[in-house]
Length: 256
Length: 270
Image (spheres, rainbow over the protein chains, first blue to last red):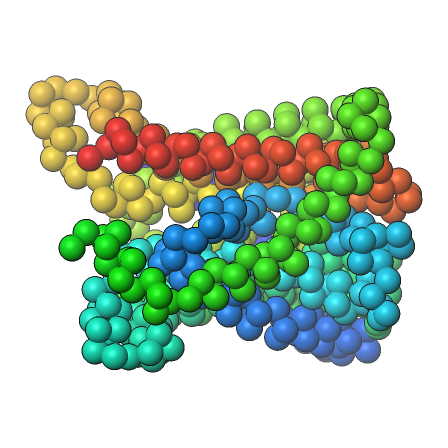
């Protein structure tokens, strides 16, 4: 009883009430102010930029995640210990450190400071920052599944003459596909919501290098609360959609 | 045929291309950038590094960060375990919704998390408190973003836990506190420690959720991540790098700690 009411009260105070309130705040004067705030050109550009970054980052980290998981579980080659140790790091590392790292590397006087095209304060650095912070999700979902399914079927396929690509396509991938899907959902959510690392390397110029999360911050700091709440509600709706997809994927996994 | 022999047999069919690509990608995205931070911090030698990293403002920021992370760990240990317990052992209307809500802080952008707390507990919240620009506000923001960690590590262990032992203890006259302390808790401990460690690492590095609430007042609400951000903006990359390297070391230590807890749990359990 104490556990139930105590923990539910805590959940309400720290999570449910504040999140519900911004939905109410965004719509308290009706739908029109919300729509006006969200169709502001800078907000629209910020949303587009956020989606662009996500569309680049998710396929990159999905491909890497699958490759990396296969390499960690199936090959014992030198260097994989290092990969294994570093692949979880983005989960435990401050996004500010990630931003600083890219700022130093691609900034003036950095090792890659002059590549012939603009990296820092432009799309490439924002993509790199988002890739860094969302790197581990697919790997972490796929590794335990690969360990669990073992190698018997893959070996049988190989013995019967299947190429390693065919073996992967027909045997390995179907077994890990729900784990991959779950990892993709988590990677997308992280990419859409990334703030700290991107805000250091983007420059945050409204209408040019400002993502939707940065738009929230800028609006709030410029006393445009309606704009901040409207963009927040949009991001929160994406988060709720993510939760829904997570549940769907979990259910699909269980039924297969 | 031993496992090694099987592996040798099939190894030639599987060129280490995947490993090479993975290592290359990881180098470009993670390793080289982090090396640049370490190089920047180590630029003037160790003596210089300590001088830059150990100034009063940085010390205050680190001290506050550790204090808050300690509070986050203590509160999460209790509330996280209670939430996991409620979700596994209790039954009530809307339990599945609550279970789904636990993951919301993972999915919700951190800047939105900070804004929602300010909306309710800030100057215009209307609940009679104002945590804006206070350490209490920063603590709340950290509690918001770390909420899922302990719940999601403890919950699966609690589901798997065999209730025979608890029933045996109850039939022998143990009360509920004793049963929890002597039977349930020891089983939960490794998972609880992993969850706590993840929450600790997150609390040390969190930026988005605290940036609006903290308002960044040095010596008062400036945590380590805000210090780093501030020193990049005021064109002091060396100062930012010194603290960033310390944060990097802490993150590594936490990950190593989690690995150690897992190995210990595997050795002592089952």
